[in-house]
Image (tube, rainbow, N blue to C red; front, side):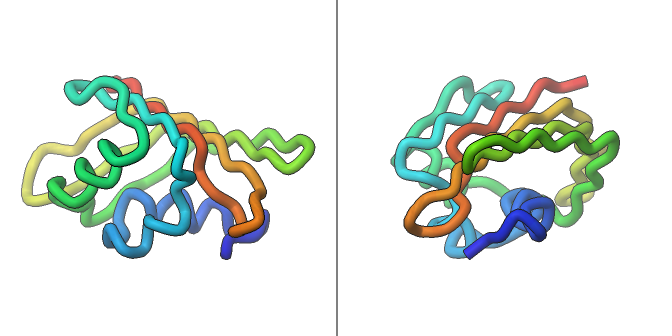
Length: 113
């Protein structure tokens, strides 16, 4: 379970962690928007995670966090590194909601820069 104190750690683990690590952190109705892949929800997110090459490292700069009534919205600029490829740069937002299962992501969006 994720607390407000380690929400940034949970966010980073969604980039670099294993698919098993993410199962409990992504809400079943989560909506994600990725360049090239478009909008993904539910089973499509799980399939995309299983099929993707995981990020080796991600740097998150310009971090913003807004909190209200059991919801946290994160905003940041990400630089991701994987598999010897050029760095990936994106503006990102994620929305986390406190649920009976702990903090779960309900939205994530990436805009390449």
